[in-house]
Amino acid sequence: MSNLFALIVVAMFIEAALSYMQTIYQKGLIQWQIVVGYIMGVIICYDTGLNFLEILGLHETWPIVGILATALVVCRGSNYLFEFYSQLASWRKQLADSDKQPVGAPKKPRKKTLHYIA
Image (cartoon, rainbow, N blue to C red; front, side, top):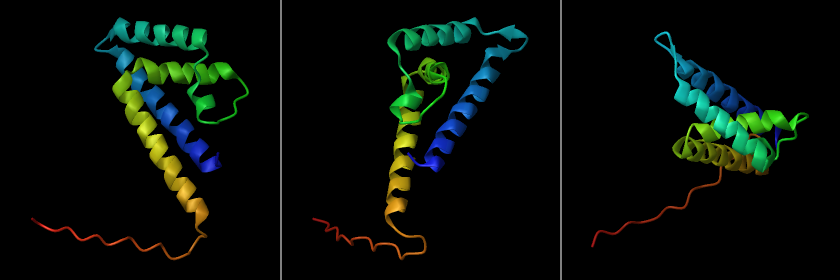
């Protein structure tokens, strides 16, 4: 995995953590549903060994960090997980494509397709 992709993944996890922490404490009250959801996510990810960073191919010194980050993504729900994964897959493909072409090389021409109206 390229260092740029690893940097993007870590930045996305940190952004997700910060934005999620803002939802925990609102209007002077702790939103207990969010805290319970995260705790449940941590327990399930730890028990099953789910580690999103490991799945993406990132090496980590402390695997618990990946488990906690995975719990953060999981507890936000399936829609967030799908969006998160789709964005990472898109960036991974773009980085892989950019590695194939030398810097400054002309871009490949796109195929022109004709659309006929029946």
